[in-house]
Amino acid sequence: MPYRWRKQTPEQREEWLARRKLLKRPWHRPPHFDQGNIHYHLSAACFEHRPHIGYSDDRLEEFSNRLLNVFPAPSAAWCVLPNHYHLLIRTPDVRTIVSQLGQLHGKTSFEWNGEEGLRGRQIWHSASDRGMQNSEHFWATVNYIHNNPVKHGYVDSWQDWPFSSAQDFLEAEGREGAVRLWKEYPVMDYGKGWDD
Image (tube, rainbow, N blue to C red; front, side, top):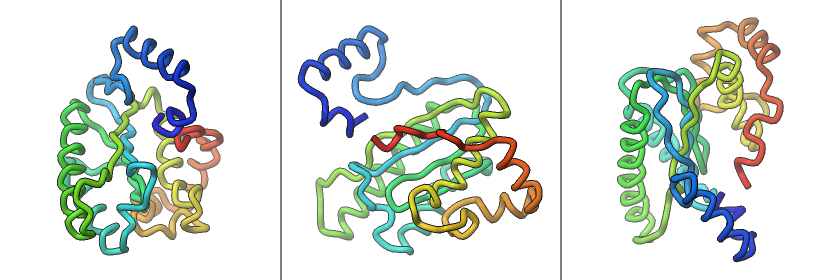
């Protein structure tokens, strides 16, 4: 939304805000829904998609570890890229998880701005969550998350990106199982428009 917002006319912005107010939703970010103990696709991007996480490979690795330590149970799928991340986790309380992610964002913003001598710079742009509706949605999300480094041009093959659960997934499912799941639950236009 922040990228589309900048291209909108003042009238379009007023219309958008009026609609969000009418629906009792946060004005500038997606609402966080709590649907019970299900899998959620959580994602967050750096402000203006700048590569703050990817400042160095060490930062990518450290942030990946810190991100995974937020959750008591292992995630079903995850991927950290230089400017955003994706997680697929099971939780009965998505609001608490989003709050914990906010704390991690605050800590890393403070640390990274200190490391780079840029106090006050905005690092993160919120977090979003989507509850999985069914098994098809779940497996398409797993495929989307693991294929994300390919989609953004970081690697040619999804299993080559080191900052994801791709290798664990491949080990658990086997090559034939991974190929079967890819064919049965294709990504197609999943995520289209998210980077606007």
